[in-house]
Image (cartoon, rainbow, N blue to C red; front, side, top):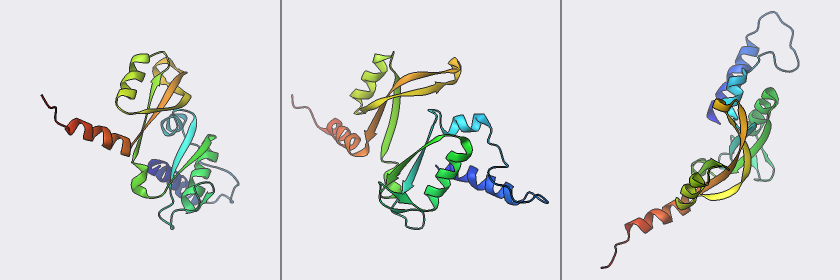
Length: 160
């Protein structure tokens, strides 16, 4: 999200510095397609919203509002991407969940993720540059609390 905010801030600055042109509606700065693919490889822009900082966001998880929500919506509009707002109660919570994916045709990778504590959250499409196409993937998520409990299991001693 930080990269997205910086990109958007740069676009606004570029617009503000365009001399001699009357104000225009919409974007006068185009975003290169490779940048869009980096920001949203699945075709959907996911933006973390820190509800713990009232300067950045207010409202509820179901209806967040504020500057980061506005920036995320504008970036989605300018890139032509669908937007998914992912609210968190505090900044630290943004980094408390890891996400991973495995191609549906690769059950071995799926088993590794499951053994590491990742939980299946659904199926989606992921853009694979080498194939120049999209492929279905199983999506997984690992909560910090689950990881911490699994890590503590490794500390237990075996009794012979």
